[in-house]
Image (cartoon, rainbow, N blue to C red; front, side):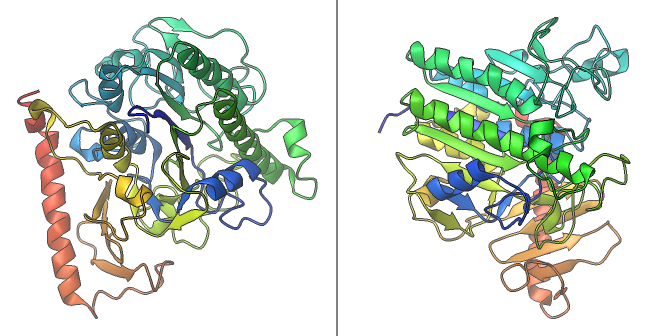
Length: 444
């Protein structure tokens, strides 16, 4: 096996666990995701590091929970230069690196109004564009944009940035997922032509509001009301681009040795009947059978679609119930390269390598997954989940094997499990707080 697999990290925005055909949606057409799930490893318990977008994105690049470096919520904080970004490791190993789509872990300009924070003096400290975080090429927005005609009537000032003070001005009409792939595809083609391995981060905006779909995609759902046609249509349009990406890898002859990961950044937005925060937002996502939605640390807010393919290493047609998280990408990629962290980069990491899982040698997680978001906190292992809504709220305990819907709080019946998990959660939070003080960077 080649020692440098190509790596593609795909992510959607606000797509619920139930928003795929392979997870049982009765209406949505996602044939390419369904095929990807059949061709690789379906992660039934894949967790976003947070129930909102910005923190999860940071976790994918660093292998660390965002509370360690100050991305507490959407549109807050930035990816510090002191963090060891996976793109840095890969550049050292000869990869070309590219980011395409929604960035959302720092502002992209200090000079003009852009997104929610860009171009405002009070936000200058959060300037952290991809080109200053080890990405050779980018086509990136700071914030969400409409899923159709993204730059024609954006909900807020936004641009697709390609470098310092530079932004795209052409090919910005139509489906946003296709617009993103129109830039990602030639990046990968050039890398293959040059004989270089590539690291491509493809972060779609779909199906985040403003949700819009073109007429041809809406026509795929003739029996649905207009608002649902837009939601379903934009998901199907994104799915089409996943298929395009996989076909391109085959055409280039690199599919066998490409590690391709797909997940959402958090659970579905809104209330399941449109978005309460954005009336007319067309956010009809489904969390499947799980409790909660975007913003919640119950399962529906953080358990999201997850698929991994790597034909050279992962047998087709597999599925796992082992708990995995977006923090695991970092350790997994390092392990795939045989890379050992230098002493100055050794700090608390929250992920673990999934290579043993890929090889069929892992049947349970070796370390629990901690969550923190605003007042909520939670800890999950392969069976139990401890949840607390706020500091003064009671600790809740759920058996995710027998009760994945989190319908029955069993804390009173299992005080010892609660005590043990609460101590683990306290210790993990204390570690995050220490990281936030900057002590991890002392020798960086």
